[in-house]
Each structure stands twice: as structure tokens, then as C-alpha cells.
Length: 258
Image 1: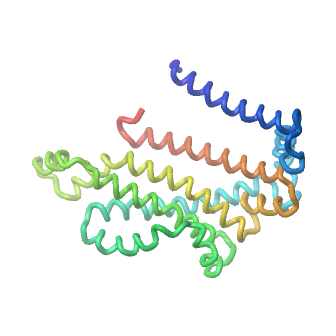
Image 2: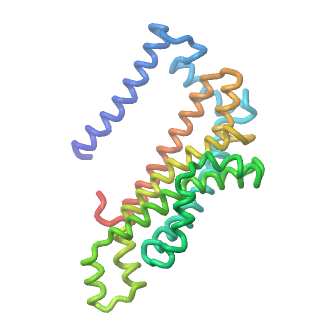
Image 3: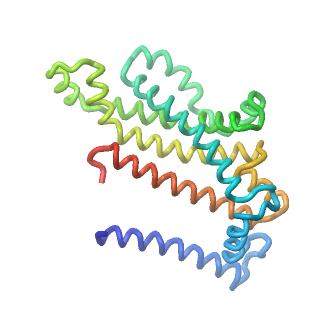
């Protein structure tokens, strides 16, 4: 490991340690905040460990709630990638497709994902379908936008070279435009991941029987702030793990990335 990576890892660890220390100082030492309002790091850690096997107060363990949220989030997220990335590519590549899709896309694009929650619950109920649909509506927009932008920013000189060597439009798309657009496409997929988590937590807060958002909502009702923080930590940990997986995939598919 080179020196820069060591320094970067050290700074990351230091920031977390400093945050926990300030938290501990404000709660356990100076007692600036009541324990019922903001529990100490020790209390949260104890609740985090206990929640792995304890179903109280929301009827499920941390693993059960996390798996329920992951199932819904990944279902909507993967469908957003499968539909959004090709749609963005073909909108940028074909003027007729762009003219046909853009009016509807421009109409739906400003609508936040959480605004779809009441409609999806009415249509699909409070099961996995409604929440996956909300996640899809939130995550598909950055997939389309970044794929579209990536294709549009393909350098004309590269296209000219491909045409000079007799490449067809389809060959130019697969061998020049898409490889050039991959950094933008991967950025869109990353942004979509954050949008997916925001949407799933919001959907579970309003209508669900299991999941991290549901766990947070139930704990809020009985003023269990330690469980609320446990749910927030679980969301953050899942986001970090998924982000690491995306980074690994990005290093494999995007040429020239360090």
C-alpha cells in the first residue's frame, strides 16, 4: 500500500473516531443532551448487538429488517439500471427515440421519488411491488440522464476515425460511444444507488410491515432513539458495502480508471 492510501485511510478512521469521541463527550461526560433524547455510543453499540437476535420493539431482528430493505431496494435499483441505462443511450444516439421519449421524461423527471409513494401504495398495496416501484422511479432518472450525457459527450474525432475505417452506426455505438460514456454511466449508477436508499427508507416509513425504515418508524413512536440510530447505522453500512461493490465493478469495466 502506497503512502497516499495509508494517509487517506488514516484520515477516514480519524474522522470517525473524532465523531464518536465528540458524541461520547456530549452524552456520557458533559451530559449536554438527555440520554433519552440522544443515547451514548455505548448504549447504541449495545442495542446494535442486541438487535441481531432481539425482535423487540418492532417484531423483527436487524438482519430480517436489513434483508427486507435490501430485497426491495435492489429489485427496484436493478430494474432502473436495466431500463434506464439503455434508454438513455438510445435517446442520445437516435434523434427519433429522443423526440419520442423526451417530452414524457421531462414531465416526470422533476417529480421526487417520495411523491410516488401514495400512488404506488394505492395501486400495489404495501407489499414489495409498491416499494420496488418507488425505488425504480427514484433511481431510473440518474441512470437515464448520465447515460444520455455520456453518449452526447463522445468525441466527434473518434466517430470520424470509426467511420473512416468503415464502421457501421451500430459498431460505432458499441465500440466507440458506449466505452467512452462508461464513466458517466457508472456515475449515474452510483447516484441511483443513493436515490434508491432514500426512496426505500421513505416508502417503509409510510407503508410497510418490515424493513429498516419500518424499524425506525416504529422506534420513533415509542421514543427508542437508540434503535433509530441502529437503523441509520445499518443503512450507512449497507450503502458503504454496495458502494465498494460498485467501485470494484467500475474498475473492471471502465478502462483507464485508477
